[in-house]
Image (cartoon, rainbow, N blue to C red; front, side):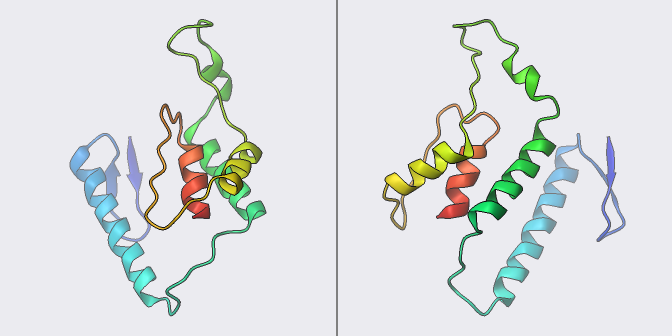
Length: 121
């Protein structure tokens, strides 16, 4: 598949490692510029309602057919379960995360839990 980028006008072949790496490098470079332009060194996390929307949209783009995630043989190694926004919110409130803490989600599925924890800390 080929994706056209608006900022450069170039086409990116998403199955080509070098093309994707170049696109990621460009994204990271631009993100660093934006971060360096901000006056504040302390950024407030997104509000819970906004974070919920962001995570939902990210999930919707990553998972086209959620029902397929549950097409597995019961009690097999392929078992997939999702954790709700509310449950992770409760975990974040109950577990004291300190600067430099490491959060590890074993079997992180599509990464919603990691994204939510990272976005709130």
